[in-house]
Image (spheres, rainbow, N blue to C red):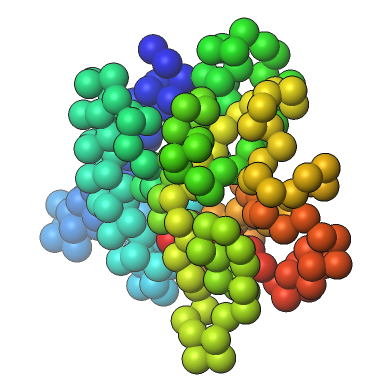
Length: 244
């Protein structure tokens, strides 16, 4: 199986494991309350976490999601629905034929690694020789190996696919980004320089974070800003990309 297809299958299995863990905890608590099962230190600790509106450690071992139990359960269900739909695309051999949403995965950073592994295999090169390249021109990048990614959000600026501009004073804190094409390419590839229009200057790199809290960055995306002073201005403004 292709690495990205195998990744989706693994995501489905991980999701089922997380659901089973939640179900086991709640079923055991219910049995204890009915007097059908003894209260153990482990289930006592899990119950205490839930009473405090925090996720039990056993759940976090399966997947590190939202800290509140209700939000955690909703996030698992949403991802399981999305991954199940992606499994249908895998069966059709068309996972990457349509844009993917990284927030639909339990482990989006692992998807990027799987895409990198698949790109290296198809190009016949070492995986360490590839660099992640961003394109915002869907028409021009369709023939370039990679994946279209939808649903990304930008904080600190607005981007229309061609240029960055300041946000309005009354604007929402996050602006939706156009569909991006993420490709792992060797440095000599015609598209390896990133977004076009910069001559010999490299494009500005912006971190991609898992959450709006910016606790963990999983990649850097490129934007068509080639002037060092302008790049510094945006960086000082705290421009960053997050998953929706």
